[in-house]
Image (cartoon, rainbow, N blue to C red; front, side):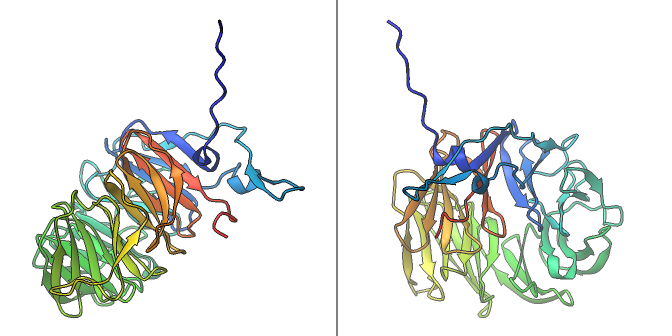
Length: 378
């Protein structure tokens, strides 16, 4: 007897997302400043580029039933254009890339470590005026048209066109992470258990603060008082810049791969536990003070691997080791399923500046852009 199985229903993710197979683990994701291109650093040193613009965007496929007013999204009818790959392993995988100008990206070259650039269409080129020493950290200062570049203990500001040095300073420690404050007036440069606070205008070191732990990510608070860092040794590092002091929140179940501030929710959140961990600003846990903890989403049996704060709303994207991706309202139990678990962990999450697109990179070589219809959050 022949058995006929019903066709599998399409999920929300199937309808709003584009997914490509880039063959190897995605290590980092970056939208360019114009929001037209997404670049992915891959585990083998290659870079992959996809266009953010979508000929069949979810909004163009939304249909509203005249009698009920219900909205639906029809499936795609055309194949996706393939990603563009760099011709050879191009980028060091241990130094995340950054934006360069309106369209491009800056990264350290895989072989020499020197500063290179990539266009939105995926062409990779040497920045011939740049110092040829190996780059250990990068960050963008878009308002001044410059890039902060660390070569070990030397910090330089270079022109985004050509890479020529504009100003430089020798710090007392090597630098492997650079965070730029919201108004781009201050740089936080971390390495070797120290963070130096540098004024961007004249590249002057204002303070050097001892910070224990191996930092994986580093970010300023909107008020520029705090720095938060996720650490490989299962801790969150908080730095009170005004007091030149640091403290650690320890005993997370797993390394804290991401920790971020949300200006919209007035909070800081972190991964590395069985739910999203967070505290309300300005009442953060420091010294003997416990702070004001908040609960985001629902607790589970799987570690939260990554969090990514929405740039325009009090929301965050949350990924788990199973590949499950949720959208949560910070400080509330509300959750929305974005992608069901695939069995392969997410290795990178990033929002576009307008909050319309969420990029998801996987350990299995999957690269996705989920585009949320304009009426989804109304």
